[in-house]
Image 1: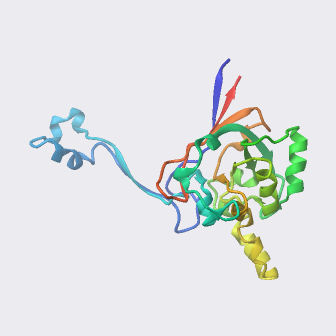
Image 2: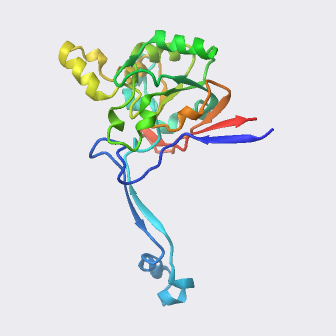
Image 3: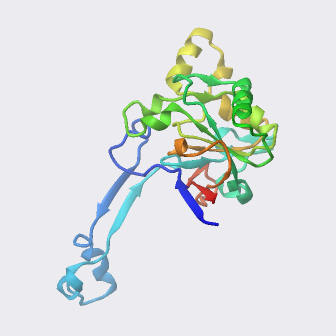
Length: 258
């Protein structure tokens, strides 16, 4: 039996619209010829020409928020409480067994940008792929946004998971989900239009706010979900251990044993 890995993560990189301004990452690169001044204080008397090819080390300065790149959101990001009143756990408290489980992919690429997925939509897709949800399975949602990464419209692309669709998953024992869109919810530009018409605050971040009722995590800005079948793989997505944080970066991968 051979093991195959599919990378589900985007790059952390400059000059690609992966977040609204001014929330994008900033990476400053220092190559081997630029860093002798960093190395020299450790070795008094050292001259640049003493080093092989006059090279020191390569290093990068990275300025990020915890929601840049492919990342895992903790329940604390969504609200201060979860499970109807418990203190919401931060990213360093997320159970590791949530982050390494069989995966399920729901294909919602046919839904238009801004569409809010319903429980009936989830049920219909599970029926289409012939899958019955099991507790702790990781459910990822393939939206149109995945094809728009690297383009200026990425942040506003794709459908979003509504409250009832999210609760459908959580009530069946799912505790970790994911999307290839910028947000688990529908893009804000569409929600803002609906809010202007209805003045109904319950539609704002409704998928995230499901965590108030049942605590869960979700991955955002996944990539390459179109390479996955409906099931038959494992997802690994362990987050960086940042004390008390609302999210942590992850190198999410799908694992196939073939």
